[in-house]
Amino acid sequence: MMDEAEIRRVAVGHVLCWLAVLFSLCVPPLLLDGFSLLGTHLTWLFICSACVVTVNVLLRLTLKPNPSTKRSSFSHKVNKLYKSCLYFCVSCLLFHGIIVLYGAPLVESVGETFLFAVLLSSFTTSRCLCILGPNFHAWIRVFSKDGAMSVWDHSLQITTICSIVGAWLGAFPIPLDWDRPWQVWPVSCSLGATFGYVVGLLLAPFWIYWNRKRLTYKSR
Image (cartoon, rainbow, N blue to C red; front, side, top):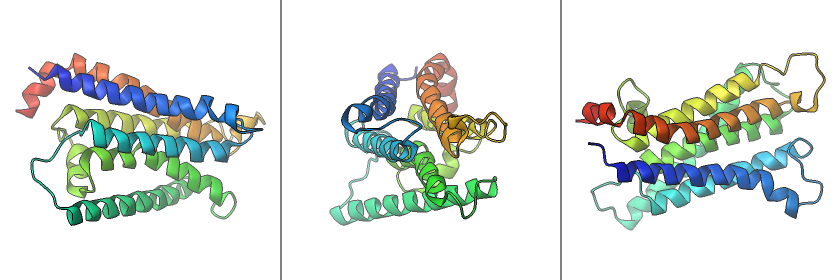
């Protein structure tokens, strides 16, 4: 039987990640003059990304998902931190390039596109780094068919896929001739990614609990 205590740990982690998004929506308007989700969208992108990454790091330090049985030296930990920062930066650049290939402006709105890429990296890459570490082979394993080996791996699959699908669906309203403020690049895409991320956070623990017997059997 799958350890239900581990499922509860995943659920707690997801609730805290959900609260990080809620914090970025509710608290800045109280502290910053003129702040609004649409009016100062770039500021919100930065705040939301910072909140999500911070919570992911704190969860890594407290809940310790997929802990390693090997003891590591201080230099190894520093090297791991360096690689994690490097991977995150590379992820932002890769997402930026992919977004441009999918139709985002190449020269105009570069700042908007890059901050949207940072947001996607916060929802996806930062979770990979905090759950799996800077281990590209582990990333490939988790996102391959039947590659997940823990409840944390399954939660990572669900939240990552939901975030990317949400961002993709958020692009559909942009070309429509409605002339709405939320159609300005990249508002609808970033809101779609955020909505997908939140849905993934809420969905993953329930999906894992519902399929716990089958997932336990597959992991043996």
